[in-house]
Image (cartoon, rainbow, N blue to C red; front, side, top):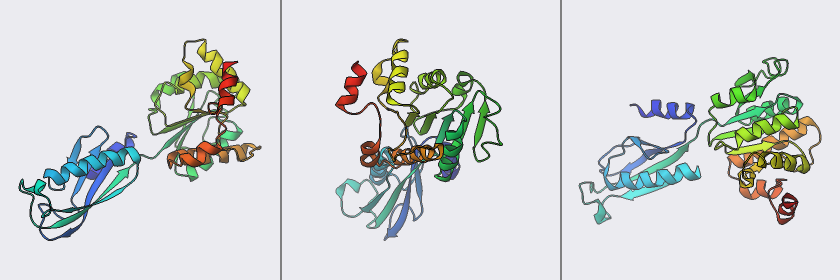
Length: 279
């Protein structure tokens, strides 16, 4: 199997991986410059950079790179460590660059109203592939969302299982009403989506949580939901709200936790919120 073909396949499946490449060689090594090793999320590999202890160390780092989504640069001196006396000691040095390969993040927008129009455009500009879902054909259509990767006009429960939402997905719930929001949130929290956000005031969000709790869903399941959604930038208009949500999605994508956590208006943070939840 070709490394590049597998890399593309994994991205299409929405799976992360790490690509290790020998970027510089000095002296004699048991491989060659530009040799590549692809490590999947499950630890399986394709390709090689020479085998032995070097490859084992690179494999370990690749797993860390997949988790952190941050690249690493490694240098190995094959004549320096007795650990390489299994045949890899060639007296040379090599540099290996290990980079995360991430799938294009998908933003699944449930509801096709005014905020969704702006959010689909902003998210697309920011590098997200947007998927819009609404149960109204006159709202969920290509005329309103020409930039979207997909547009679905169908009931949420019908479409949801077909979307392939996983840990690289972003879910935004902006349907036309309280009941529809609750329907989608119930489905979303059962996934491993990286980001789940729902529109509404704190009071509305709490009411939705209480209703779902009556159906047997534990309150802890809602702790990762961003609601009210978006960074607190004083947004008022639908377009401003869309920008605030897109900004929060970017912060999550780039692991800018110190920024988005401090600005988020999540009802699940702080002792005062817990007190409200306990009411």
